[in-house]
Each structure stands twice: as structure tokens, then as C-alpha cells.
Image (cartoon, rainbow, N blue to C red):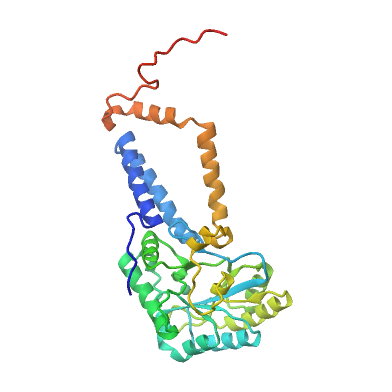
Length: 350
Ligand SMILES: [Zn+2]
């Protein structure tokens, strides 16, 4: 597979790594080498990692789609960790009964092991998304090279079926994100998809409870996370299909139509990977497609900018910090606040 050439600062992960290095160097330069000067930037970096783990919809390391347009009457059901011959056929039966389409984020090795299920998924016009090759629970700690291997091998299993080289949608195992994943995703030009509603079917096996939760919370544009398979061989999620029956019935009563994730995001082709890149969404000014977490970060950034500009005059703050540590920085003398040649005349009282 041919990889697109990388630009010099090619991803948010690159920018974060540079910002981290600059913050640490600056901190050590100003305050000297101490537990605080090294520890504070390290704590910030750990907080960023924690964000990639705690919030699957975070776009910090790479733009991530969490939902589609909230206007309209469409939702997307997505099924992870399959296909599983004990569960997936019943899931497909339920979807067919309600004339619903869905997106299956398959584990590559399971897809390859069950070609008849893969064929049925394709024949019934569901979408195949990539959920890595082996679904390692340690994948978030892999470097870029191993991330690329996992993603490419999972994608190739789908490409062999679909007969297309177009990158399928990608959902990382457990939804975890890290800087190496951000770099790999950028390199492969992936469209990362998380979810806006977790059915919690991986934490319980009561179909009614799962269905109640989904139907209580669902709204137009939602991408719902369910599981028709299991990442551990020999384990299954049998509650998925009966829960799905109830969910589909409830959605029909509310006139909510189930489409694939690609369709929800504007593609006419349910099985063609996804042509809508987050960058495209941004270019056409469609903030709905850029992930709910924009709503979380944007006000923070806006407030930070306002506070900086209006409440602080930052230059005197920087000057006073530099004044305290001129020797460490090798700054012999800071530029005068008023340019030379313009003598300061005392202001006459008015
Ligand atoms: Zn998974």
C-alpha cells in the first residue's frame, strides 16, 4: 500500500511532542533543573495521554468523528469485535427484519476466519469498518510501526472482500488513542470513528437493560456502540442480538432510520469506505461532523485567549520571569521597554 508523503509537522501528535519539548526546555531554563520544572510539563503530558484513554471521542491526537448531523431522522448502529458465528447471524437477521443497515468494525483475524459471514455482511449492504488485525489490549502502547501493521493488516482483510483499496473507517481497539496512533492515522489518511452513545453491552448481559439504556438516550445523529463479537477467543456477547431486536422496534416507533456510519456522514455508498474526511467537513464548515468534544475544548480555548488578552498584559509577566533568571538564559540585558531615541518626557499634570 502506497503511503502519502508526510509533511514536516504532519500531525497534532507532532505539534504536541514539540510543544512538550519546548515547555520542558523553557521550564528548566527559567526555573532551573528541579522536580517542579520537569514534573509540571510531565504531568501535563500524562494528562494528555489520559485524555486519549478516558475520552474515545477526543480529537486531541487526531480528528475523530463521534456523531453525524443532529438534524434529520437518522442514526448509525455500529458493532465491534466481530464477526462471531454464534452472534453475528442473529444480529444480521434482526437488521434484515427491520430493513436496517449498520457498520461492523471487524477484527481482521476474525473476518478472515469467517469468510461466509463476511460475504453475508457485504451482500446485505452493511459497512465494514477496520478494528485492527488482532485487537490487542496493549495496542495503545504500540509505536508507530506496530500501529501501522495492525491497521494495514486489518484494512487489507476488508479490502480483499470489498475489492477496493479505499481506506475503511477505523476504530482503534477499546477506542484508545495515543500520539503513535495519531501519527499512523495521519500517514494512512484514516477517518477515525468513535461513538456518541455506548450501549454498555460489554458490561452486562441483560438485553432489556441494554435496550432501555439506548432507547432512553438516543437522538438523531447518534453513532451507537454495540458488540457482536469478543476480542478473546471462546468468549461471546449473546445479549447483543435480543437487545438489538428491542432497540430496532423502539427506533421504528420513533421514526428513526438506521443507516451506516458513512451514510450518516453524507456518503451515498454504504459500502465504499468513507469519502468524508474530517478535513473535508471542516472545509465545508460543518462543525457537526467534527466531534462533540469540540464543544468541550473550544470554550476553554476561547476563555483562555480572552483572559490572556484582556486581563493580563502578558509581556510584563514574561519580562518579570526573564528578569528573575537572566543568567540561566544567558540574557545579559533585556531590551528597554521604550525604544532608544525617544526620551521619556515626564507627563505634565492635566
Ligand atoms: Zn473492540
